[in-house]
Image 1: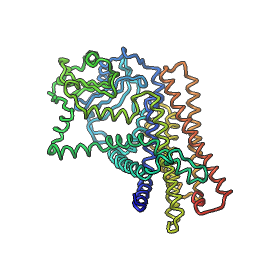
Image 2: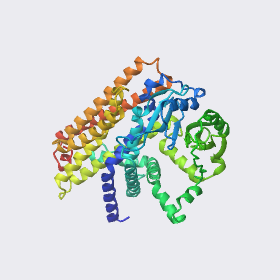
Image 3: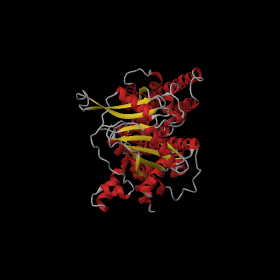
Image 4: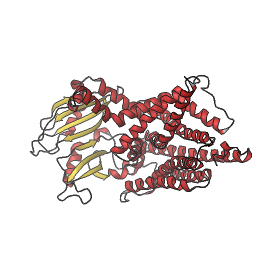
Length: 530
């Protein structure tokens, strides 16, 4: 490759990395923590876990539905969805809508969405599930930045840029990828940043390619779907879905009321049909109607990421759909495999721990890339000092702001009582506020390194105090908690401790850098970090 071409490619790689760095950092930090979202979810719902039986044989959907119908005016024109109790979430989690006689004062709609947690044995309503959704919100930050569908597509575009950056980085270092594979020069800060950047990028290449590809599939799948429908099926998206195996039958409502009982019998029937599976969810279409359809989904216990679904007409309990009879299709099986690869849920906690380390290493890869860019630009005479200072402040405020926001989220989730009104909204608002505060306040910092230490110190202290509080809570209520919830507490405390150590180690590294800067000649490249 010609030197000029290599130089242009390197420049493009640097600019792409700089532009997407903040969003990509958020995606990888929150994604790494979300690998343990089931544990975070179980930890957050610990107070309810002691009130609920988790044994599978005690699950009764019929009692749950009966309990809800006695307390709520369920809107029959909306979906009724129930999530199966699991090891880390020993509740029936139900989503439905209630009918309103007058339009909702905020949304103006004729219904109100409900999300509740029920006792799996008695069906009694235990709590509003939206109060315990910190793990879900943390995961939402990973795939849509908490911005909904717009954020989903935006992260998809960022993921596409990340994929381009991976390929360009591979081409740039291809000639020296074997020779310098384990190179890590300890002389000079730039060499260490560059060597760490290259080493992590090379060793994590399969991981990065996998996440870039699977992220693209999840975030931009609608674009692929529309393109295929237009090009291959003349715009008929229904025909495309049927060819891909999504050919579920359509049953229309007849607007005749019927009793919603017999769900438990259908659940047992589905287990016998599927074999060795774990039920994941039960959905009722046309709830309250004579033509109600019950869809039961399950994940196979003896196959890699194999999902099954069966549908019954509730009135006569006749089977109208079964995945293994309706398709033998590589598209749906492929999507399930991609999902398991992305979520790291196919090989237990060992794999999740490995993914956690790789995810945090990728976050360091992003930070080091920005530092390399800043150092390189500082040596160019035509570089504007003001624009360079802006990038330095932005790098400090954005990256550390993410850590500060997450620490605030864990702290408030721990400290706020269950009875707090709009608890999750308070956590969300506080996290966004912490991030924006760090982002804006860093632009007024005269000494970037010193201010970075302040923000990191706040994050470190918050993570540490939260970890200590949770450790004390675990010890004091150890006997009352179910074994799984104890484990969830331990995982969360370990994550908080890890984040504390990361912040503390970064502060130590800044102190070392500042000391070296004071004891060495003041060259232009050394002044860039002050």
